Amino acid sequence: MSASDTSAPSGSGIAAPQCFVTVGATAGFRPLLEEVASPAFLKALAEMGFTALTVQCGPDLAWLEAKVAGLGPGELHGIEVAAFDLTNNMQQYMVACRSERGVRLPGCIISHAGRPIPVTL
Image (cartoon, rainbow, N blue to C red; front, side):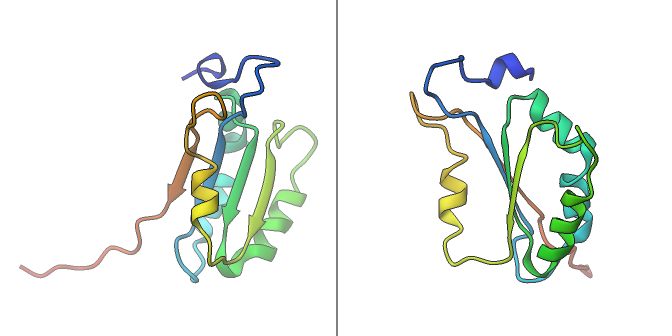
């Protein structure tokens, strides 16, 4: 999908798509956070017309903030990154990614699926 497929028409008043990433628990998940804080991921978001990335990162908030702060000039690719540790209202972040005709374009929610559980047959 190209940026032209997801970008709101200039001056349309329609909000650009947002991306929400959650580690899905109070435990950390740094491999996921490393990926979403990488310049390559941020560039891909920008190319698809995204302007904002919100990350729920559990106990790794300070780590993620330092990682993002350490990115060099241009490595954010115009993406505004916000992060928090925990919330009792995850729904508000998910709703911000939902499409609403005339209001906002569809966004993206990324979450890890948990740990594999060994199954003995």
